[in-house]
Length: 346
Ligand SMILES: Cc1cc2nc3c(=O)[nH]c(=O)nc-3n(C[C@H](O)[C@H](O)[C@H](O)COP(=O)(O)O)c2cc1C
Image (cartoon, protein in one colour):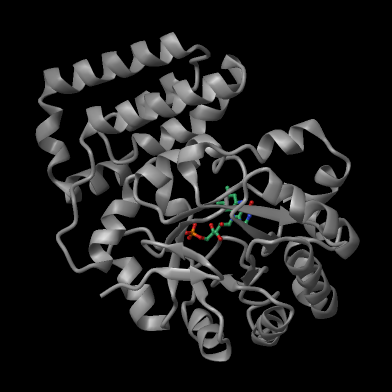
């Protein structure tokens, strides 16, 4: 029996969250992931300074689609006074939740005392959280990491302070800042935070197979699971993870035609959002993910890198699917082990 996640008054069902990813989780991808079964989707991180300065590009990043709610608007910055202005603007733009980034380890963000730098400044971190909580009428959550270094266990104390500052839930990426994205996430950090807090905890790190979701919940006691890279090129993954949570049989992933159909929809929607060359440029990385494990993925990726119009991408996909059919490639796709082996050999 899986319980929905409650963040303040907001019910997140299923308790599966698309993690924030700069460069990926724009409103197009968020909508695809909601359709693919995510209970809550997170925006890319948005600068509170950009909001404060009423920067057009920043406000464009905060646009939402009707069908993607509930959506969590993730903000980064370090000044409580600026947060007081930015958090209500993020709600006005469509945020059902305001999330504060205290996990980003990119130097440009850290240097400005934002992102994971805040974990080394617990007073500032708590003040920033309290400012958001006081300023807006939706629940405020915070996303942290498991400390600054591998042996820094102060994250449990930071987590408690954020709870005391009024956070309604906390997400923890179970890697330290030093690790960035390297090595394995150590889910014991999630368990420690779950044991220390009364508010819901969202576990994050290395959920890439459907059964990882119930395993993370079982092993850590977390209230919800956040999936970031595991959703790259497969927005339907949430439906599979939900089935695993409910103990049912896992629906098969779409075949090559289905996958690439979603990829084309993704590209078409992006072209409506931003200009065509930019959209196609952004889609390169996404196309790489959509063909993960498929035959001739390397050739497809290299061809996709040359494409700069939607028509050309459509032609490339049609040709690729025709080649697959001619080769009887559909049969290969039914064997997951063969798919993994093929991907590793490329
Ligand atoms: C390309 C990329 C961009 C990311 N951008 C953000 C971000 O804007 N805000 C944030 O809190 N985390 C960001 N993350 C971290 C993810 O949300 C997540 O914590 C991390 O990838 C571990 O989860 P996973 O194993 O499910 O991918 C990013 C990760 C990647 C790979």
